[in-house]
Length: 225
Length: 225
DNA sequence: TGAATATAAATTGTCGACACTTTCATCAAA
DNA sequence: TTTGATGAAAGTGTCGACAATTTATATTCA
Image 1 (cartoon, helix red, strand yellow):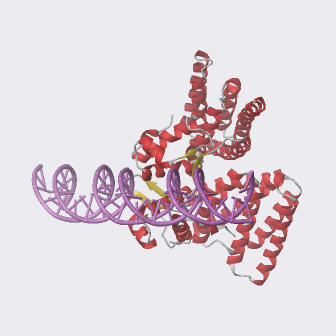
Image 2 (cartoon, rainbow over the protein chains, first blue to last red; image 1 turned 90 degrees about the horizontal axis):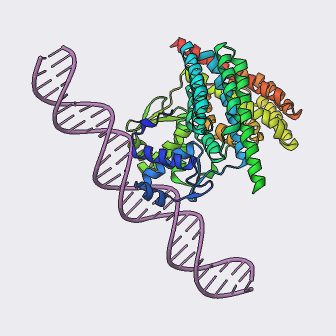
């Protein structure tokens, strides 16, 4: 799904590894990161590790303060709302641009993909892995279909890992999946019809719905504790 | 206007200095950055300079490639369009949120500010410095009025220096200033009326107009060369 | 001449050590 | 006990040197 194959340097590898550890919760939210400790664990020097930490800061997965140190971001309800507001605006834009700039063949590919996901979903029902991958794949293609490289970089490289972190650590899956498929279909149809305004509206609703879904779950868990 | 006073470390200072040099064009667009050379010039080690380069990459002012090096971003017409599309979406969102979240006193402050800018403009007519500063001040206050810290960080820390770079290096000033004042007034009035939808629309138009203004100038210059 | 190859120079990536700041523990005084 | 000062410990910031890669130059062969 994602081209991690462009890992050319040691700090690249460490960056990818720590990013995964944070997204999947193996390094706890809000926990402090010790440079010496992590460097030793990954078998690199502190300079290399700091390079990786800088990139993690660029994707908003950690926060640094001078002379104080580095902490994994904390996923509060407020933060969730903030990130989803930004994501909605940016992916809405991406979707509108996709309606202007996606080629026929690119659109057809997405349609095929949706059908594949549908059949896969029927077979593998209950396994959220495929659903999650399929959803991300769909969104990535729309985003890249915008042909706006700045927007693509912002969403794919700087924001989506944070969104994945929310989804993974809050156990987002299940109930919305079938609805999401229909929404995806409506979006790609709007794009196919070159109706950017509608495509933007549908994407914003789609993201708003999934955001609200996570938020509900989050609030319930907060109350339960 | 901006709180640069939080420069605590050597790399902070180098970051601020190089950022200014890039924004103001003292380091040419698209030019390659030699780590050794720049480190020597600023009187720091390469490690410190690389720290600064990482942050410059976070604000999209330079682009790095592994084992190749670092280049100052090139301001092409395509890039301009891309950045302004993103800016429009994000500041539109900020403006809508500001209509929901700005306090009465914050709104009053902005109104006072606009009047100050107006009188200053009359006195110092022709000097674009005050106009530029005033415009930035207005936008910063609306952005911060959104109370969305993620959005604020994205716009103020990661995008605005790039926008300043466009404006400074393309000599953006003059003709739109008086219009901009009226537009600013309409926006803050919409916010005051808690009309987020209108505020968002007006802000999007306002940015779109200034973007188009720069773009026209850019195209003319390109043709002239 | 021109393309391919090999060697040298320059540049970036990485490392270990030291300097400075923050934090924590200890202790003295009110 | 609480507060504030003092010093040790831990952690981050910075440095210079070495390793690995890329780029430039020189050379050889078709």
